[in-house]
Length: 477
Ligand code: FPP
Ligand code: K
Ligand code: ZN
Image: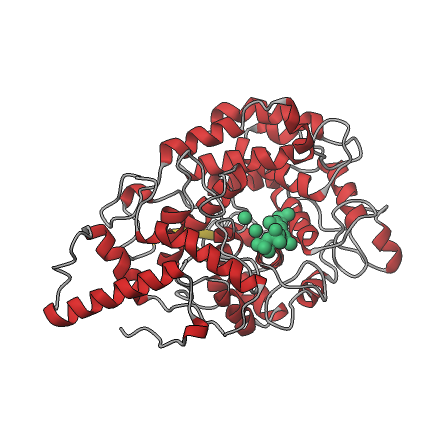
């Protein structure tokens, strides 16, 4: 139970020192009385939370003070009060942690799906993302999104480019990120009319133009080739059950490629960096968001147990992913020496669901993540956020909730699931299921549990399976 000894040169923030002093006081109390009976004015919840903070490892530090170390100290100053107490005065669950504020998060996301004032015109290219984050966030909260079905189909029918793919809105050039968010949103909206609004043949040609000879995909014609492209492309190909053969007009055909998956696994493999993480493109710095894209791509081109082990150094990846979990904050950062941020609850937290399917469960600290999300990432005004002091937004709401779902549910890859589905192209991701809730206590109560999400597509299972089934049953384009 003893805390690591540190010299004054290694002193953490004053807030942390207070916490350490407090936890040493508790330790003395518990040594003398065997119980946390006499804690002065501390409530039961505070006692439990302080005991938790005392039990986690304190950050590893060296004596060098830099802009980075100062920012990290400032971050602890803003986060720790939320782990220790309840500055927003949220109602608490049985474990003394803020309950999931379902109602206010739903209200916030419904606002995000509504109209915007004129200055938001600059967000126009992100429209498909906003719709995706809103619909997925609401679904995770158990909210019925069927009332958005017609609107969603209509909005995207205008954003579809005549030569395939989707832009941010009418008249915009197609972009692979917009197209990805569109296809996920349309799958969530569901229904024959919605599915039929997608010009799959034009999409086939569009994706053919993005495919590169080295195996990857560009995000946009003549634009950057990165791992988002590799992931987005296979998500679309798989969900819409588009043929794996490259269209005759695909430029990569001139260099001998014949299918969308040619050289793809090897290209993703080259994105694994020296430290075990995954980067946007070969040679770049590893980042959690790109790690999820890489793992998602590999989990679509085959069963994760096969593809992750074939194309990645998995032990090194696990080391890198583990190093992303901040302590004592409990949430994740996106890259080495950077700050905890609620959106990485998914980008990194979600990597675990895929990695554990390829290796073994139990590799990460789920409860510490859930603790960060419930205690520090919920905004008083509704929605979830990067960290205390930041405003909530649909992006952080969606991905904090997805992260909570990765912490709470056991995601299992099992070929026996949906045997009748996914027998054709890129069919691996149709064999996932959620096998009960993760067995643990001390952090979330029953009312704090979010819905399971499909761990590769990050939309509800039903949306994934119905969409793929619809396009498997179609004879041709
Ligand atoms: C760094 O931002 C963030 C990135 C370099 C990548 C972000 C990409 C995504 C979140 C999603 C990509 C996925 C798809 C499917 C398109 P930063 O420097 O502001 O943040 P940091 O300090 O936390 O690294
Ligand atoms: K960030
Ligand atoms: Zn973020």
